[in-house]
Image (cartoon, rainbow, N blue to C red):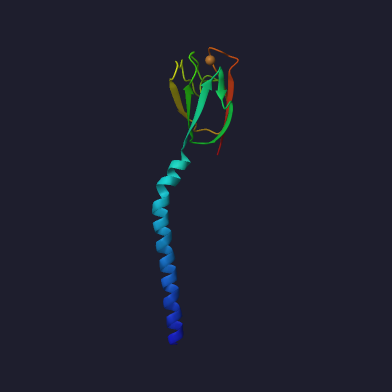
Length: 122
Ligand SMILES: [Cu+2]
């Protein structure tokens, strides 16, 4: 009987200790996990192209285009509704958060040969 009580005490200590460790780890992990859930990805506009031209992101991701060219550019959704940076001068940037899943082809309004595509997944 004493042995059973001893075993139960040890088991209780192990379970309690594990729960404590998990809650401590969880408390530390939480801010990082949240930051990774809605990260920002950077896209460069350089030499008359979007770099990278094709990108796959998770829904909720924020994309930031930075114009590294000395010429003005735009990042405009082909449907013109989803997003539109407007005219970006040298060094200017535009940020958009992608909240719906799907393929979002886009282009530069000033140089229509400049094309890119965002693929948003769940
Ligand atoms: Cu352009």
